[in-house]
Structure formats: structure tokens, C-alpha cells
Length: 102
Length: 261
Image (cartoon, rainbow over all chains, first blue to last red; front, side, top):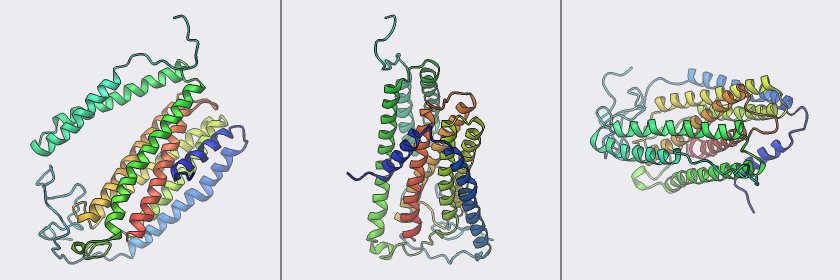
């Protein structure tokens, strides 16, 4: 019977747990953490930093597409026209970008 | 009766299931009241009651297991089944949102421009912050495994270090995602793209916060000597949940961030 990915991960975790007496297990995972996992995070951080530098700073021209910026019901906060993570630089309202930008 | 002649746990009567049910009712009806009548009082009350219920119920379970010895091997086996079944139910929860995403993205309607991403949507670059987020969660899976082996080998200081590192990585993911949410050029109101993106990743983010909290409770318990090298199911449950959160992210990353761009 095929197992879901979650069940397989749980099985692997359970198998690891049952190997309680296997010596050096903690040392192996400590080494993996500092030699593979955390440097991997570091590389990806550097990659994001470099890509951010190469970005253009302009936002795209506003086109009032009817299938975007839907407002069938106002949000229950402030003026009901701004999403929860609204960013006036990158998120135009249905009528266009707010005020003088940048 | 002077002593029990079986290994199971007959739990003492408790008010927390009732307060939990009342809290859930207040939260849900409170949400509806907020939407229609702009008052947040009922919802806030529900939220506070929920937090109080969770704190006291789980505190009682810790008392019953760690301090009173009720969590014998058969009882622990039942708890394992319970956690596995719960995580399975969460898998199905996310399956629904993936279904919604694939339903809309495999056959994009003419209203969207007949393409995916829809016309006018600028998706996030999957090889920028989303890739970093993937590395962060995968790394946290390695550190939580380091923590587990440390517990099993009785390494107190290493357990605390690795568990703390795991939690920090969880916080880093949450911070990065919050920044992505703020900087994204699209919102939840941008058609079915926005809906599927923010609902799926939003619920995932909520689960990261829940998982980080669970791990943080384990850290506090580890510091207070609750866990032994043979018996630490609370930690194992937290670790399973954390791996589940990681796997859901991998599916989100491949489906929505990568294929969906």
C-alpha cells in the first residue's frame, strides 16, 4: 500500500527514535547541521542579497484589469479598500497607485 | 479503589473540553459579528478563552504524564496514534487547498487571459526568498533531528542548543514570509491567483507559528528536566509536526512558487 509523504517521514522519524542506543547519532546530525544545513542557508541568503541588488526599482505600469483587485466586499478594517499586507509602493488600488510614489 | 489493575489512564473529570467548545463557538460567531457589525468583542473573548483552555489542558496533561506517571507504554502508544491521526487530518486539510490551486491553474479561464499566472500578475521569483525559505526549513529539519538524537543520548546541553537553533530557524522563516507578504506585487484580492496563493501559504505560515510554539514549549520543558532519554513523547510529537510543516512547504514551493510561475 502506498504511504503518503507524511507517513513516510513519520516512519523514518519513528525508526530513528527506536535506534536510541546507536552511538554517535547526535554527533552525525550536529556535523550535518553545521557543515551542510546552515552553510546551505548562508548560500541562499547571499543569493537573495545579490539578486536584490540587481533588481529594477520601478513598479509596472497600472492596467485596470477587471479580473484583478477584486472588491466584491470591503475588508472589515480601516476603509475596507486595503488588504492586510497592503504596500502602497507595490500594490495599486482598483483605481491605480496611491498618491505620489517613490 | 486502592490501585488500578491495568496500565491505562482513566482521566479525571476536566472542564477544559467544555471551555474549549465554548471558546470555539465564541470565536466563530465572533468572526461573523465582526464582519457584519464591526465589533471585535465576542471574537476577542473567544480567542482569550481558547488560549486559556489550551494552556490549562496541556498543563494538566504534562502533570498527568511527567509528574504522576500515568503515561505508561500502552498510554503512550495511544498518544502516538492520536498525533499521527491528527497530522493525517491536517494533510487532508492542505490537500483541499492544493486541489483548489491545481483546479484553477491547470485550466485557466478566459477571464484570466487563458494563461497561468493570469495576465497582469507578476509572480515572485522562486529562486530568491522562496528558495531561502526552503533552505531554512530543510536546515531546521536537520537541527531538530540533531535535537532528538541528543535527547536519546542524554546530551542535555546539545539538546538545548539544537532545539533553540531549530526554533530560531522557524522564526527566521516566519520573518522572511512576512516580509514577502508585504513586498509582493499582488494581494489576496487579485483573483483566484491571489486567493490560492495567500490561503495556501497563509495556512502554512500559521502552522509554522504553531509548530515553532510547540517546539518552544518543548525547549522550556527540556530545561526543566521533563524529558528522559527513554521517554520524551512530547518532543517527538513536536518533531513530527515540524517535519509535516516542512513537507507541506516543499509541496507549496514546487507547485505554487515554481511550477505556478
